[in-house]
Length: 327
Image 1 (cartoon, one colour):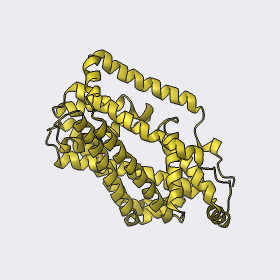
Image 2: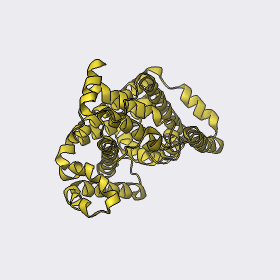
Image 3: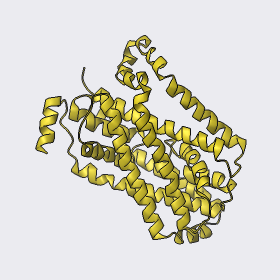
Image 4: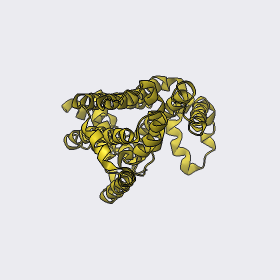
């Protein structure tokens, strides 16, 4: 059966999609700035300490490197092994692609195509990328639920904390039920049985625990990053507030509607951090600063995008090893 090519796996019209995402994000931010006086927000942004901003960017970059290692762990479960620098390069190709393709699927497809071509095992490569994204979301849901149940020192309303707790519990139930869900795969229609390549993830959930641990560390680091940005603005909000609000806001910002959650995150911060006592100007400024951090780190993926050669399609495992040795 013919393996999918790059053009068939990465969504088309990237520039149109990029323009739509930017336009929608700018429209939301513009509406916020129009409704609220933009001058205090701009003054707030000018207060940001370059040192704290750089520290937040460095921690976020380290988290992306750790995410590449998490993907390597998941790929090895399916028999896709290789040097870490290979997974790191492909991961950052995906990070850069995500800036221009709607949602997170485009970047995942790009890195999966690179890995699949390298090893001649496209199905396993796509399964590993999807599992990597899925475990990241599971950890996000779990952390949001834990924060809503145990860290609600800001006294967010039940309309926020209860849904967060429910989604986290459902994610936990789905994870535990993995071995039972694996039994249903042979019963699927023939055209859907291709997902059987991912059955090892369902059958042996304990193998996923190291990757989930890294995902939880990553989500906590994202909250710490934004706490650093707040410190750079001179805010005295406690770290626990960010551990509570950031995971919930990230769930909202992960919707594939705007560029890197632009506008969505600011709106979520305005509501959530506002409930925790953060002024609205500070909340919007924090969202814009975090958007700047993610964009700058995402643009570093251009280095991998330019310098990483596209692996030869249908390379056999032996050919892949030979190619890697030559490089």
